[in-house]
Length: 329
Ligand SMILES: [Cu+2]
Image (cartoon, rainbow, N blue to C red; front, side, top):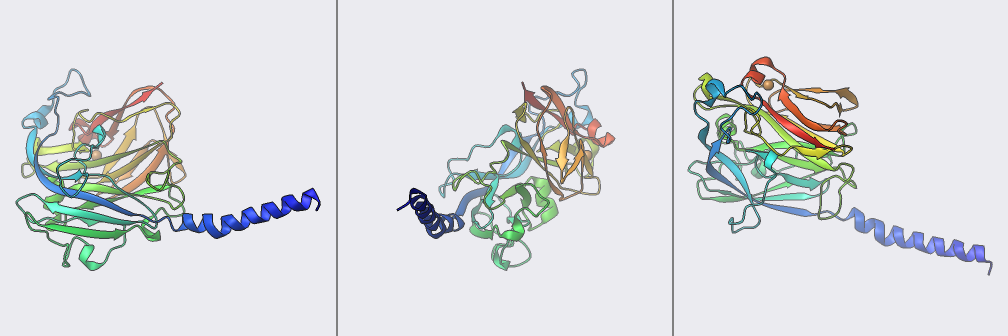
């Protein structure tokens, strides 16, 4: 037989094997991703250094009068014993554990309410049946103190990135028994969904076309019935530069997931010094957020240094809605 024919036959056999076995195996690679999350009462300090780290000459103003308050948080654990917390990056601040999935996956959240009031977990974006809405009737709508509930959510096509989105998008989750009160208590987190075929691996659902993903929640927590000193203008629950950990380096592909929550006053304009971002194909260095907005933008840092990252609304800047992000050379 002619050598060319043999090569042709081998090529076709390999092609047949890949079509019959390898491709279907990849298409079937759907996972059930399990999370153990408890709601807990904590003491939260809005500025652990007790310093204004943005203006070295400045102080914390009226907002420094009281810095520590009782808050409620979602805390992630490694398993159903709820004894070993899942470590969080420093920049995550008050945010609950990051839930992640790839389009096609199912998310199971084993929720335990360790607090003294009924709470829930209500997700945005993902597919759920009525019992797993975490709000408005259904079994998961109100979980009593000490009780548990397992929420089943599906990262279906409609929960994943759309045609104009980057390879991952983010959704909020929050408690929804007395929603406004509970979001103000701190019961907030996010769900990241990666486009099918874009995850690093079966076990690592992070998108492989970016090196790092950060999440930033812009919200004003109201601690003292609208008293100005209790209006904490926060990024991930910290004020006046007290949120460390946004660290990257030149040339890295960085994705920022920006979210906001709150009231009419929670119209935030997120601004980076030293860098621009791509937002749905548009170049800018300021992103507008309204309460419950969610937005993914990409950047490749081009200038090394410690740069301001802040809300550009004047009143909010003055009240400490700023921190720094670091670009290493
Ligand atoms: Cu703002």
